[in-house]
Length: 192
Image (cartoon, rainbow, N blue to C red; front, side, top):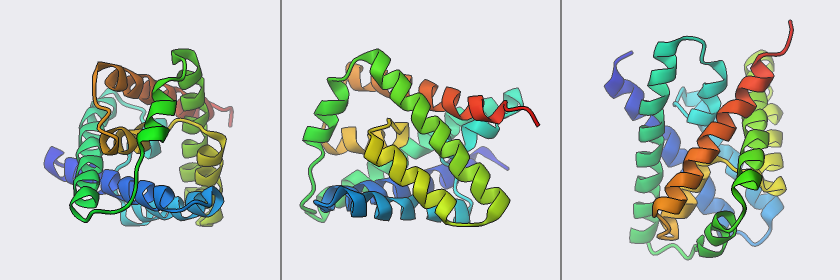
C-alpha cells in the first residue's frame, strides 16, 4: 500500500476517534459516553482504517514500524479535522478541564496509564479479529475511558479542542505513544 493511502486511512481513523471524543464530551453520563465512544473504534476496525493504537501491537518488521510514523501523522490530522469541524459547527463541548487534568498528571503516571491503554487496545483488536464479537471492541474502550487510561490519539483530539498544544502537550503525547506501544507489544509477546 502506498503512503498516501496509508495516511488517508489514518486520517479517517483519527477523525473517528474525534467523533468518539465529541460524543463522550457531549454527555454527562460517562458510562454512556464511553459506550458510544466505542463506535469510533468499531468503525475503524470494520472499515479498515489505520489507528496507531490498533496497529502498533501487530508490527513485526522495521518497515511497518516506519509506517507508524505516517499513521501517527494521519491520526493527528484526522483529530485536527474533527476539532475544526466541531468548532465550526459550534458544538457545545469543552475539553479544557479534561486536558488540564491530563497535563497536570505526573510523567510516570501518564506513562503507566498509557501502557494500560495499549494493553486494552491490543486486546480489543486481537480478540475481535479472532471472534468477530463486537463486545471485544466495546468493553476495552469503556474500560480504558472509565479507568482514566491514556489513549494517545484521543488525547490529540482533547488537547487540540482545548487549545492546549505546546511543548508539554506534545511531550505528553510522545510519552503516551510510547506507553500505548509498549502495552500493546507486551500482550503480543505472550507464549503460544
